[in-house]
Image (tube, rainbow, N blue to C red; front, side):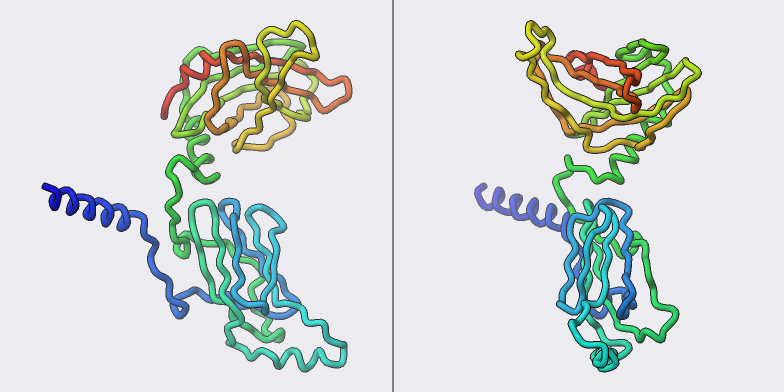
Length: 288
C-alpha cells in the first residue's frame, strides 16, 4: 500500500511538472535582433514588462513605458578622434549579448547581433510575437493584463436586460452599477455613466474607497482608498454615455462600512456624483 501511494505521488509530481515545464532554449535557436551604435531598439510587449535581462555590459537599456523596453549598445567614454576605432570593436554578425524579456505570462529571448552603422536596414522597433513567447506558469489566480482585458471585453459584449445593482442620479448625471462579476481572486465592476445635460463631461477622477456607513463626526471617518488593478479604457471625456469595467483584487468589508464610488468632474466647480455599494451587493456577484 505504501509503495502504491509513493508511486501515485511520483506520478502526480511528474504530471504537474510536465504541465508547467517551459521548453528549453538553446542560444543557436534564438531569434536574432540587429543592433548598432547610436540607434535605440524598442521592444514592444503585448502586456506589462516585469523584468529585462541584458547578458553583457555591451548592452544597456531602460523601460520608458510599462510595455516598452529600450535597448542600445553601451556608449564608451572615448574622445572624438577615437570614435573611428570604436566601430572596429565589433564586426558585423558578432553576438553582443542575449536579451531576455519577461512579461506577466511569458518569457522571450533574443540574440542581439551587431550590424554596421552603414546598414540602412537596421531594425529600430519590434513587437514581441506569440511564436517567441514561452508561457510562464504563475499562480493561476494571478491574471495578466491581457487576460483581464479579455474578461472585461466579454462582459461588455454580453448584453443583458438585468436590472442594475445600483443607480444614482444628480445634476443631470447618472451613475449605474450594471453588475458585479467574480473570476478567481478578481472582482469586476461593470459601470455606466450617463449625462443628460447639453454640457459634455470631462472626468477628473473616479475614486473608490471603503468608508463608515454611519459618520457621527467627520474626524471619526476612516476612509480606505482602493485602486483598480485594471480598467478597460482610460477615457476622460464623454458627452452622453460612458461604460467601463473596473477590476479589483478580491476584497471584503464589514456591514458597518460601504464602498463609496465618486465621479468627479475636472472643472473647479465641477459636477460630482456619489454611489454607496453595500457588501451584500458584492456577495451577489455573478461568475462568467
